[in-house]
Image: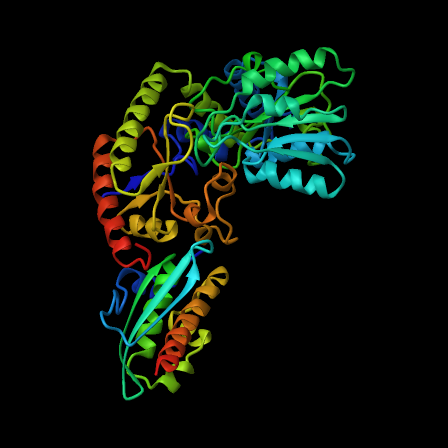
Length: 122
Length: 387
């Protein structure tokens, strides 16, 4: 199972790592049994994602996908952010091994969940 | 960067002396060992000499040794041969190597009854549970000598001894096989003491080449070959003798009887013990498998709130090669069947790391590794959503 250069770059130096204190929205997905848990923190102003970060317990692909989704979502309006799909994440990462595609889906799910939580709270 | 190899249970490197012994058989003494001319006879002599080395090592007869492509083929041959009519009952353990486990499942689908004995939580099979599973239609017991992930040593000699008693009263004797691929370098391999009818070995776990293995078949047992073709190995296994690899395997095995080897085992155990002590001091780390009844080179840990593949990748970036039972690293997304079989919860099995020491490792490797490991564990835990 080989990872692309881009995946390894994001795994080595993940973007937007860590917790955001007083986040406006949080989305956590995955479960310990499948092995991957992703948590996204969002700062939102005027319906725009001003800041976003992640914490992930998971494999190389899970960490790279978490990093990529934060990079993609940052600065976007909530509606635009919801348009990000797994294919975009996979493409931007230079591809993922087939058994790892679910990691990109998990990242999308985490973002959707965070935004849903935010909208419900409002 | 300093490279540290801690994955000797996956494969060892080829010992320089083994390589040297092999080289003439590629381009100079390249004859087919089944050819009658002198080049062929030279190759045949090399094959026969290796059989003598192996039969001395196993305390068996030379004609009881056949060469295969490795442990997987040896294991497949035994199971598929004994159950070539897909009838009867097989007893094996739940944490065998996939080449036994999946073959057992294959046979099960075609009608063979299979009992998978669950090992105890220390990773050792209770021999009494094996004996209790025997039924009137039991034909084969196949239990690995040493588990490949957690290094635990199984009571093969004990099962062999008890089975010999049980067989006295049986018209149809139960055959006994052990997959000794992981055991060969470290534990006694005397057939007479183990009392097995079949035994599998592999070259590349003992500083020999890949793609070569041995199947010991006790005299008098006729098997159905897995591969049909030429008359090599008295019809037990067709295919041109892989002479360079056979010679390499012989050299690797001859090195196992030297006084140098005995010293290596002592050294390896000291290194592993030091590694175990140091790693177990890290918070949230536990050992998988029995501490005593295990191979001297194996350490297998669970790291709480760490996923094994990312730990492995980070270690690799620091020059350390090892392996994990994490589902994420398996390609099948299934956590290690070995860890699950000894009662490790799936959510914890993802955080496993296997380190298997080799003869060239040093105490500096251990200390450097522990330093690197500590900082990686700290880093990975720093961004885990679970605390």
